[in-house]
Amino acid sequence: MNNSITILSPGTVANMVCGFDVLGFALYDPCDEMELRLLPERRVVIQPDPVYQLPTEPEKNVAGAALLALLDAVEGPVGFDLTIRKHIKPGSGIGSSAASAAGAVVAANHLLGNRFSNEELVQFAMFGEKVASGVKHADNIAPCIYGGITLIRSIHPLDIVALPAPDLHVSIVHPQIEVRTADARAILKQNILLKDAIKQWGNIAGLVAGILQNDLALIGRSLQDHIIEPVRSILIPGFDELKQRCLAAGALGGGISGSGPSVFMLSATETTAQQVAAEMAAVFTRLGIDFHTYVTRINQQGVILKSENPT
Amino acid sequence: MNNSITILSPGTVANMVCGFDVLGFALYDPCDEMELRLLPERRVVIQPDPVYQLPTEPEKNVAGAALLALLDAVEGPVGFDLTIRKHIKPGSGIGSSAASAAGAVVAANHLLGNRFSNEELVQFAMFGEKVASGVKHADNIAPCIYGGITLIRSIHPLDIVALPAPDLHVSIVHPQIEVRTADARAILKQNILLKDAIKQWGNIAGLVAGILQNDLALIGRSLQDHIIEPVRSILIPGFDELKQRCLAAGALGGGISGSGPSVFMLSATETTAQQVAAEMAAVFTRLGIDFHTYVTRINQQGVILKSENPT
Image 1 (cartoon, rainbow over the protein chains, first blue to last red):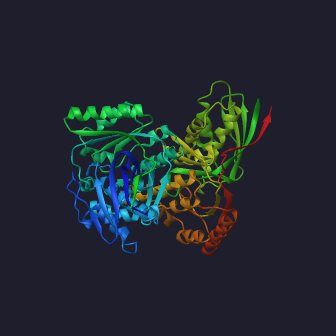
Image 2 (cartoon, rainbow over the protein chains, first blue to last red; image 1 turned 135 degrees about the horizontal axis):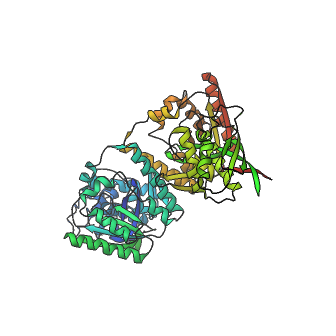
Image 3 (cartoon, rainbow over the protein chains, first blue to last red; image 1 turned 120 degrees about the vertical axis):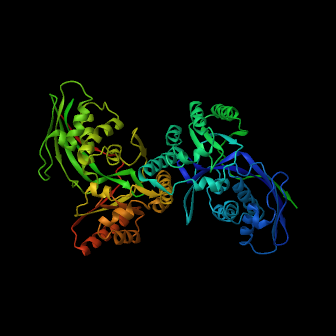
């Protein structure tokens, strides 16, 4: 039996344009690197992160809370010691807390002989999201664990549908501004127009059909958000110009990642994705806002096993 | 060259539960039978229907208006003489006007050597729907012309996505009560809750994924409508009991067809579809409301060519 494992837990994009609260996908870059070690006693130890000031008390740490939830479903003298090297910046909008929570429970499941299903792992990891944002949402955790593009059809009861994803390229820009998830949620209108909702569900239906039929043009036509983006994009300086320039550079479409401030764009080729990232960089350079860009692909695997270390 | 053609133009189910205004499918039964004859001069003649009092002035007749729209795109001394034997009762909620409009232009296109695309035929037939209801909607016309299940992703610009449909069985009950489309539309709320809309677009995404992956259980779980059905179902006596009994009999799911009063249910097998139709009959028999039931399948072909008659 191995008593230690090292995994890469990926960033994820939730709220995929017309798929607010229900569609998300995983990335190859950035990823957190996590090492989990089995302990011979029932406790969870979180090693301090050298870069970010994250809580080390397990019940206040997103990975710790997820591991405690998993431990509740396990009998016997077993516990976990977790070291995280965080590369996904907290607050970036690309699933930093989900990567910690999901990566921890996937790693634990490996060390325990894969006794839990992906759906059970999502349930455990949602306790981590609750620590992070107060809400047990699954739209980052599900793609982090399943890989590819996932649909959360329903949260009560939990119904996750894994959608085989085309091999699309992703450009992401993370402008170094703060958009608090709570603020991004507070500015949303609780009432919307039926006619806008009809457009939105026409588009999400088109997006799912495009994904499953590998119809990139249909994916592009469907990546429109008539409800959330018009409200939330005001929190991101330069958003309209950014989007217009990315589409002009050949992106299929894109929008706000999670609740922002990161913005993502999908492209058919890596060349286009690089050009799109260059446009992203140009906009924030001109605005004088620090930023970081990523050019990557949709990650079909989810959490990736890096090495297992026998006793 | 043939100068006369006989076709079967199918009934259709629009507003497919969570797919309000965007998803519809075609039926094998009932169908209108239509005979279209080429005329050597630019005019449209509508023969009187022996059963229903439908207008025979072409611009006031749904099939006539559709043929006039098509004729506008054709040059030369050509016209049409149309005889309709209507089997889809007007006002039943299973696409009676769409069958007339769509059947007429598909027949005309055959006689003219198939010069128009399906999308152009939908555009012509929408002029017929405008005569019928005042609105140029496409959610019955598209499945009537394309067959199977169709998504109207967008109406401006028109974007029709044909979804390869599983071979599902359909039970339909048409209670002989009047629900005017205008009334059914007037009682809808123009504002809806964002949280209900999120459930709806989770469900339509699940429904499209279920259709394209032939996952009947997912189709069943996704056939939920949190927005339209709770409002419109009050116009249909016995609706809640009807639905509950159909699901208990094994139906995957279903709801109001179009704007009613017909109700449809999807089932995996013909045996189940027959049992579901028996439940439908039992409910309206007990309520003392005349009704008609159909047990049929999703029609993958759309308008069916019955015979071509050379000069």
